Amino acid sequence: MFKSVCLIGAILVLASPALADESCGNSPLAPAIPAASDLSGKNTNDAHTFVLSALKSVKAYQGSLSTYRECLQTQAANQKPIIADAKAKGDKAKADAAQSQMDALQASYDKTVDTETQVVTDYSNLHAAYCKMGDGLVGCPKK
Image 1 (cartoon, rainbow, N blue to C red):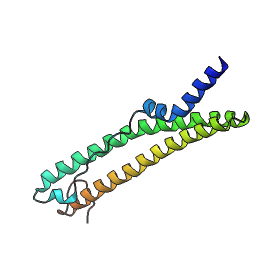
Image 2 (image 1 turned 60 degrees about the vertical axis):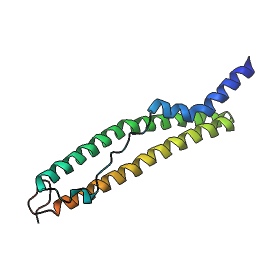
Image 3 (image 1 turned 30 degrees about the vertical axis):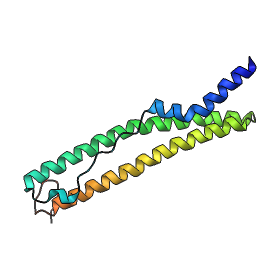
């Protein structure tokens, strides 16, 4: 009986990275932000609508990232007492598995930061190209 319980516990600890991803779901999909060159041939009203649509996509993406990241942070925080308890009991395998889980959660979080940075950079480039289309455009700094 004791061996069965230990075996089940070991399987759960080793499977925990996959379980955490399932409980947080998949990372939200980043929107495809149009390139600045996609503004060519558009009048300023159409370009404004185009850029505004991209901004709404960025904001929606950032909103969904917030929920996903909170889940990852909660999952990572839940690993800390498991690690401490396992170390206190001298259970290196369990501590290592929990640390591996925490590292995987952090890597997932870091990947969302990198992706968000790229999305915002792409949007910024699109917006800058729009602002170069003329003076006094909505949402652009005055020159």
